[in-house]
Length: 276
Image 1 (tube, one colour):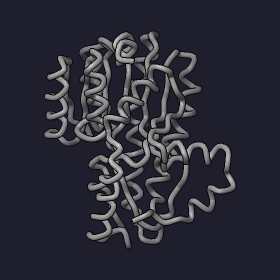
Image 2: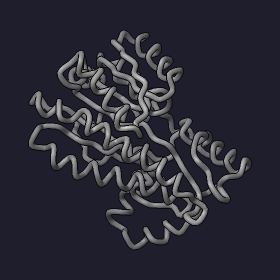
Image 3: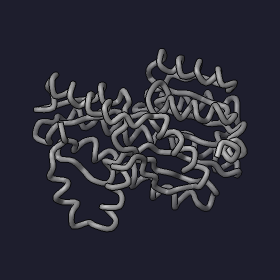
Image 4: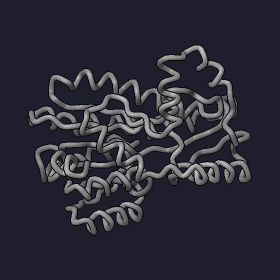
């Protein structure tokens, strides 16, 4: 597998948003191990710098960029920096995201806008900024958009997050069809319960906005301990095979198959509260 990934990704120019921790960091290091050239973006300079340090330890060429993916101008400025040095990227991973939980009647419109601006529009901004150069260059490429298992089944405690991830999956599938004629693959990565900082940093509202319950959520993810490194390995293989929608983890696969082959049970599953 490593040899196949070296052949596919060596010397490729790859940009990852949300690279300062979690899945973004793990994927950056996985690409670094197979010889990719990295552009690492995060709103958190310290986390991004640490990812860059770890990637350079693998011998990778790394550039770091601070970017707020919710801000179209910030993403455009990042793209201008990249395109001042290279004609186009080979792979863009729109990974930056934020979690949220709380029943609909407890959520605020401010939270709706914030989560949608990061999780959905951050993906759109990344594609809008980098795809034109990839298309114009005419050498293909790949877009990776991080969705979630919540893009298959929506829990009642996560209306905003689920809406954002359903939208990312739908956008990704539409974009994949659009970009096929340009030999640009587009993949939606749909992780399940992954032990990353996104859980601790999520926006909690209503009954979910409780220190003890938040602690239990974090503990639940830590005990599950499906690691970002496991996700990263799946990401590289999904890009190599040009997979359209890639569930990651057993529960993500379960939700994916339930949605496809047992739609009658989806409504019942969607009525269930989160298990913490």
